[in-house]
Every structure is written in C-alpha cells, then in structure tokens.
Image 1 (cartoon, rainbow over the protein chains, first blue to last red):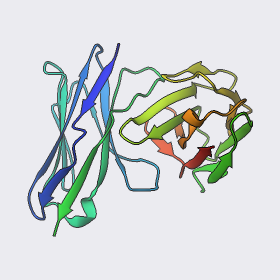
Image 2: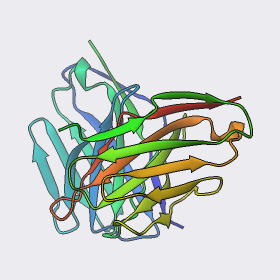
Image 3: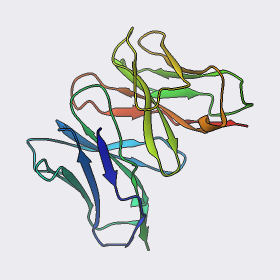
Image 4: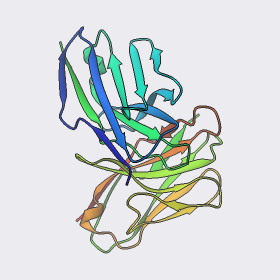
Length: 111
Length: 113
C-alpha cells in the first residue's frame, strides 16, 4: 500500500538557520508533490507544488526538491524566523483525485 | 469570498448519537474532500467527491457516510457516533485544472463521550 513518511519528531532550529524537512514515499509514482503549512487550530494552507519533471522549485525563502529515483522530496526554509514555526505536510499525488498526506513535521524556530 | 466553510466548529455527542457535519465552498471547485486529524496520525482521508454526483471512499471510511448535495456542498454524517470518532474534521475543495491545490476549511472539533 502507499506509504508517506515524514519525520514525526519535532525539528527545533535556531533563527536564521536553514530548516530542511523530508518527505519519503513508497509504492507509487506521484505526478507531483505538494507541501502545506498548518498552524495550531487551523486548516492546512498550500505552499508549493513541484512536478515529477522538475528537480527544484523556489518561492521566496522556500525551496522544494523532488527526486523520483530516491522517492523523496526535501523542503527547505532559508533564513528561518520564529513565524515559520508550524507543522508542514507533504502530499505526493499521482494525478488521481485521491489526496493522501504524510503525518507532518512540526518545526519550531527558536529566537 | 469565504472559501470553504464548515459547520459546526465544535460539537459534543454521546455515544450512539448521530450528526452531520456541513461543508460549503464558493470557489466553483469540482472536487471536495473530508479528512480527520488525530494527534500523531496526520490527515487521513475519509471520503472524497471528484465531481457533483460522485463519491468515493478514502483511507478510513468506516462509520461515516457522505452526500454531495450539489456542486457547493459536501456533508459528512456519523450515524452512530463512537468515542473513536473523536477528532478534528477538515473539509477541503480542489480547484479544477491548474495546480490542483486543496483549499481547507477551518475544521470542526468533535468529541464523542
């Protein structure tokens, strides 16, 4: 069955450093992969999408990579700020309507 | 635009009671989804509707029913609530074409005693 793994342990990082979050998937071949941010008590909010034929995507301080051979996506936040503290969810999507999410990684940026 | 609106925001039920969670979107999206979120479990897909008139099971459909009332509305019904259904429920809709991004509602917190 399809499996999506994100580091379930919280990631603590000092302000100004680069945070790197990992999303690994098995048993399917997504056409694209999405990253969402979720703040406590709120619904997830879309951040970035990367397609299978793209190696890297950037948006301001965010960068996503997608390695279909390793079946892995990395999500980077450069020059991290306390306001970046949240849970980040990945969703590798195979082009069908069925969107499955990873368990999410909680990021805490320390001032 | 309100986006995705869920009601109620909070609900407490007794075991065996029934209730319906309502979801409406005003973005003219074709597809709609219901997820539940439990600590340490992430978002788990309950049911989804690819388009008006169709519904499909997700990862954890047991104990739930859905109705796609029209293009705007997608409801989730618990016929006989159980404590294991205590959770936060999120509705989402998906834009048609383009990036196929999901837009989520604010969530409905359900407690079953």
